[in-house]
Image (spheres, rainbow, N blue to C red):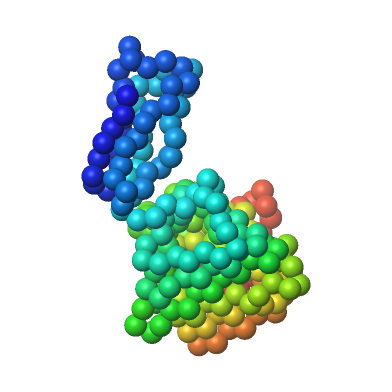
Length: 238
């Protein structure tokens, strides 16, 4: 059984139980310029009749995406699961919008780096897929994403640069807010805005044993989340 669609949006596949068996794969047919999630659907033991999928007009990035030494993002990117770039140099073109779903994060480790250099006319936007649904200061992550994390970085990693970027809609329920930097001193934030974000430690920035460069950057409406089981929050914006 399968479905064919030409339009972006959310769909439900309703399969006739008489025509499917346990472990059958449902074929999802989309044109070359469309992207679907989840990529593969396998019928479960309970013989599920209805399965929800989402069709996207723009590139989907998830835990099945293979990253090379260099990657280039442009236009519009949908990040659907946690992403780790271990030895990848990610370059993001001016005017690109990256939307994060399912409380996902973008983690940079080892010799990975991000070069996100927008312009005053074409900023790069990192945002939540459903930013209107976010309540920044409760412990529910609905609609949000979990920020950008630099951790376990190699001493020879290149400098990561955020220039003319807008980072918003982060709600990190486990650690820092929009950007977390751990034991790494090669991050520059220039001419950017970090807003409407929250975390357990620093709503905008959580910087641990690191030095970073910040110039001409606006921090607006960021704060910390209180979760009693994790002790009191630390910091406000930073």
